[in-house]
Image (cartoon, rainbow, N blue to C red; front, side, top):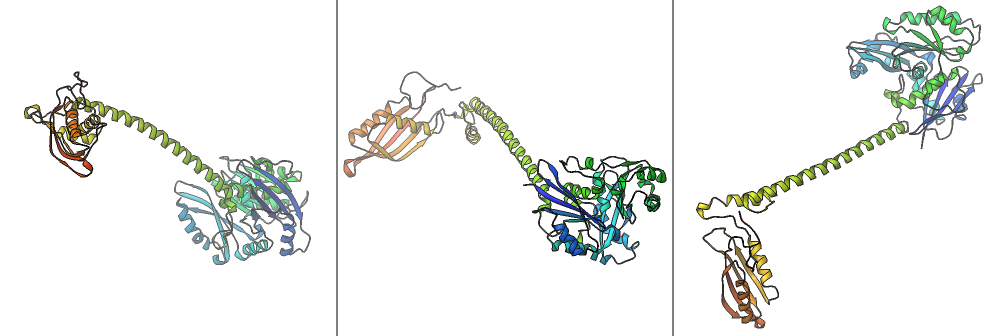
Length: 490
């Protein structure tokens, strides 16, 4: 489901609304409208009127602050740490503001930070004015996520460039001024506008703009002016300002500033510049909207729907990163497993050369090597183990009615001593005991079989003790009864 937001620009006699709907794939303008405010309309009546025009189920609302009651200051700090800037803004403003900061809503934006220098712009407005606006809008279900200085919103409509550009938005009674270079550098609102083509305020407007430009430092002198707002429609305004300010003046393309947001069939004139800038700023920056008065004790404490688009993008990005990490781990595990198999096979082959047979357990190889001092002591590496003797007995005695309750097999590996099998068991009869001994003697490795302590036990069975002497000829393994050897010993 998309995010729906509405930007509201309030002036003396008109309220302008721009609505956007944004999904992960695209964003589009869904409404552009103006509301004429009847004379003598109070604040409660104004917002009730606006409420009727705002689409239902809107997620986010951003509104312009009252530019007439706000003032701005350009600040410079000899450091670039943003935390130090946050701590120093209030201290810096105390010396230039003639009223108590406790009763003032303060917001600031860092325009440029480099070479141990930070240039910022701060905006101030009476706290009760901002709080009153928030309360009035909340009373009709339109509590704003951001209350933004209108001039600051104009920065979102200027293409990103290294050129310092001034944006001048002329309304009927106010003019908003913003300096932009890769983002907002300075903003202020002039208490003068143009209401008609041959307005007598033209001289006053040009003088106020010239005074503003002269007050700016050399680093903030623009190279051109982009003109917008209702007053930009009047013929000759651009040429008049260019002549008076000695700067090239062009008309701002508000629709181009919306890109890549789709406009559809909506007609967006220059008078909607502030509303469009507010909508685009909230959509692109979320809580990072420049010169938003909703901070500190005025901060918005509602739901997180304003960040839903950001969270969606973050979740998809994190999911992609995790998927890549899982795939990478699987590939690395496969490569390591293949390499480990090669190493194990190489170890098995090496153990055959060292101890005479393949032993893939390193501990077993170490044990064999520790038990093999040299041929001078008559010690050799046995070609078989106790399990080989057990297997030999299982094969030889298969089908014979005999079972062992105790069986011990000893393989010493000494050339001068026989290996031994000692056990205690029971058979079906005395004849079966003799058959056991006869079967074992058939094996080429069995040297002697001794059966003793035979006696009758329960159910007619015969208990006996078995002692077998084992020593295999070279090339012969336990369990072989033929004459030809099947293994070679190096």
